[in-house]
Amino acid sequence: MTGGSDWSLVRTPAGRLVFTDATGEIFEGVVPVRSFPITAPDDGFSITTVEGRELAWIPRLNDLPDALQILLREALTAREFLPEIRRLHHVTTFATPSTWSVETDRGETTFVLAGEDDIRRMSASMLLVSDANGVQYLIRDHHQLDRASRKLLDRFL
Image (tube, rainbow, N blue to C red; front, side):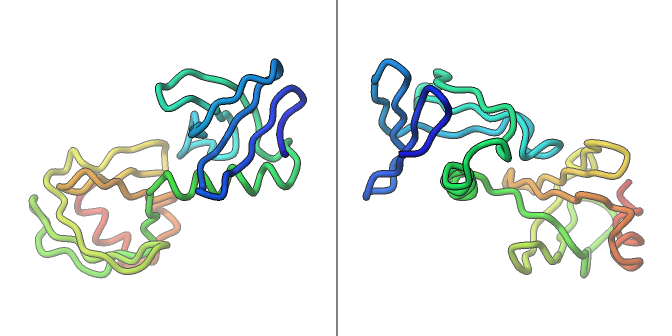
């Protein structure tokens, strides 16, 4: 059993997370949720019921015991999908809609950018790109992309 000072969290053989609170009440199928998945991915977590009721608040993931950190990271990875764009290979046109061929941290992919409004600035260097199907892609620092990628991206910014 792994947990905070007054609660515990375990994974069942079926893969579901089970939370036990300080009073011994058991909640099956709980869900870890990041409060700031893009800007502070290791800070601010809730463990909630499937209905969204918060059972525990975790200020920093790194402050937890190693076994609990691993359990929560595995659960979050299975739940979240936010590929990070590492390189832009090709765009079909500099007007929208436009088809982009990119390399992400999860492999090569192609998607359609429906409009320029689908590129949102999260900070001075961080961008969030939404494709026509609603999948979001992160560009952590557009200044760190290779020159060819920056040149393509600059046409849309």
